[in-house]
Amino acid sequence: KEFDNIAISIDTYKENVARQALLYGANIVNDVSGGNDDILGVVSDFNAPVIIMHNRGNSQTMDNLAKYDNTIQDVSYWLEERLKYALHRYAIPKWNIWIDPGFGFAKNPRQNFEILANLEDLVELHNNVLVGTSRKRFLKSVTRYDVDVCTAATTAIGVSAGANIIRVHDIQKTADVVSVFNAMNNVAKGTN
Image (tube, rainbow, N blue to C red):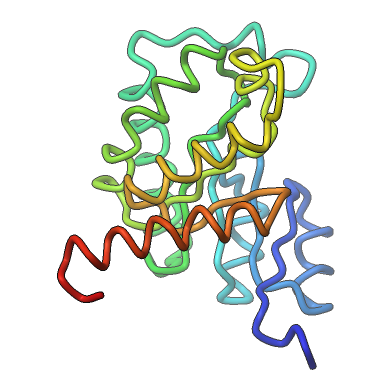
């Protein structure tokens, strides 16, 4: 009862895992394969929200596939095509689809920072954007100390850009960052 208002997300690319998780109370399917037909069929059947994450290859091949002509344009185009596919092929309502640029998946550190610097482009594409930078390897490439502080910085950037789901490990630090952002934003809007 204490946690009735908390959504449970399952990360999978497997149809049977998604189906069983939704049957047993999960609320959201995070498709780490980027919206494969099996997952889209399941979430359509359950009318469940889905997160479509940009990815290339698998854990053994993705680092070699981090080649883009223009990182933000290529990732945006790919996500836009998957979004259209989910909308038209599976009639998943737009508000039930979230896009995730896939920080750390088939991207080198510079490419991850390029996406972070241009998150507004993804929010323009679709206003349901998830940012999952928590403790990612690309953050470790710029610090020798507390990677959770780096995560807090990327959280502030994500929230400022309009991302509305932030995936993190340290919930308290993240809540504090978002509280500071909201207080600043309220003062700027004159809503105190």
